Image (cartoon, rainbow, N blue to C red):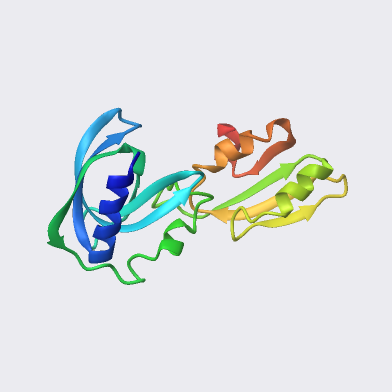
Length: 177
């Protein structure tokens, strides 16, 4: 149901043209008008997102496509930022997903998973984050270590394992879970 929005965004990306739209903020429960420079379309967990900056050299933000209404491409062109200012891979590098909490420092994350043969295989067969390291403990449990800037998506991920996962570090994350 977002074909027209996507078509307009793809043209805007191709021609480096600004777009304006009304955006529904789920956290605030309100609509706001936005005028942005579209940078990247990203698919994450079966949903599409737009990475865009409000200013030509501004910090990128992530917008959920399904919350964009009344999108229009403007005549204004912008200069796509160079890799020092914006690199899609670098932008998402510090998180385990698409949601960010920018400005955060690096967090050493240590999670211990229970002694479940299926769990060991499930965890180690996948790349959850490029910094991940697994260690099999003597009791059969699995220790996962990684360095993240944003732990926003880590909380629900760890909770999804129930009693089979325990956060060791950082203490703030341990309290959240």
